[in-house]
Length: 174
Figure (cartoon, rainbow, N blue to C red):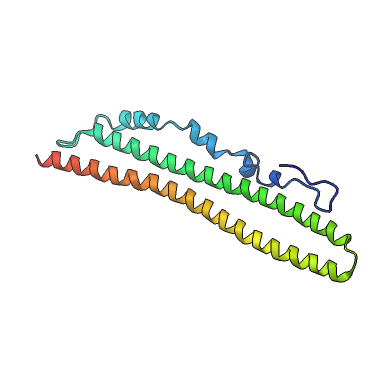
């Protein structure tokens, strides 16, 4: 991405959405990368390992909970990546818009008469509105895709968890 220069819009919008500087330097991607659900399982096993319910095998329960935590972590990671992708794309769109406004202003100042100037501005306005609608649709689709991926991850695990619970209940009845 290039920085617009020699215009009234002299800044780099990509700096607006630097996730490493937002939220006090907190980077959720790194936080999730360092997260190890197996450590939680180990700590939970230490705390409740001696607890024995009648005829309940705690190992499958613990494994199921570990998988649940992993699914939530994966869904959160997908959501964070989606937000970062949307922010990045918004910055790119904003930069391109500034460049187009600058080109339009330059073109308007070189028009030979008022009618040509008005016609150029009207054409630029129409093109700008068309582009804005296309960009809004693109961003909405990106957000929808990210949300769907995160939801599908948790939903799939929820179904698996129910099947695991069902299997445990069947074992208890036997």
